[in-house]
Image (cartoon, rainbow, N blue to C red; front, side, top):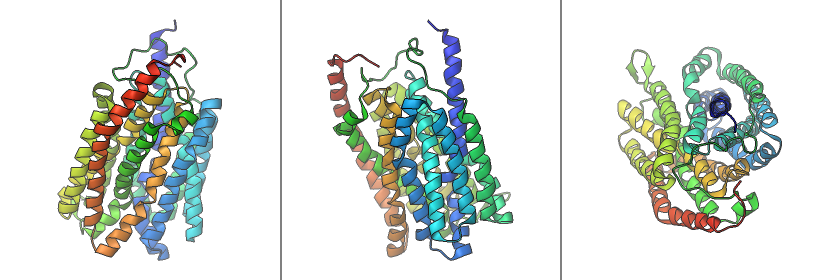
Length: 421
């Protein structure tokens, strides 16, 4: 049997490299809000038109991942992550020179394709290397994506204000893409039998691996998909709109302490909460179960949306309740992948969780709808009401529909004669 300490070092080393890659692509999504108003001011494009680029990015970042995930499961993670690193760099370089909405959308297509390759493959490695602590491992990996932008909020704002948003796209795009490309060649998947000595998990898991075809005809998968869309849509609305919302609430440029404005403080705290939520709730779910953790997180999320919409015009309340939204939204990227792999097995984990991850792309097209609702009603109130209701519905689905359905699937797998993989 392989030395446990050596195997542990290998899997943590791979996980750390995956986390760094996720940090490098975080700005593609979470730094986007800093560019919306500067782009609009420079070209006269509407926010809604600019946010179409964000929707395209999210769609391509998610909808192509089943293909990228399948390749990663077959040939390994190295070429896919390296390919992604090249594309994310090129995507932001295109944004730097985009003088038309068409070119901005092309940059979103290129960047989204690369970002999805890096994201899905990195998460796939986490669920494979840590069967005993799947929620925590996926949470740490996803935290790199959720919190990675914290490191560059102030530098990006500085570059935008002093050198223009074009320079920020160009400089950060080249550096981020290069780092991902280099690290890709140090990442690998576990070999068959390499994790035989891993400790047992505390949560229920399937005894066999389901193929992508089996997953796509499973009612559990489509229930998870619907739940993912509902929570992701509410979170993406906040992610993409936080700067415009702060501006419309007249709190964005209010100085809270020193020279730190409400928006700057909110973006930093939001990133920390968004990133921290993923390993936190992942670890909780490893111990008390996936569905109970979903109920806790999304229930708090519903409260958070309501409070931000009601009290967000006060600077410190804006910071606190926006942070609570990010704290109770970001964990979908640890809870759903771990739930998916628990239910359908590890052999095809990357492609299966990538199929589920396309729900994020579906939800992205609701982001411009938030602007339309705000424009038609004159305020963000109805947007926050809708997002709160969606979170409450997901809580009910997790406890009263998903939990018994997953139990039946795993009970059926126990009686299946196919060997565990």
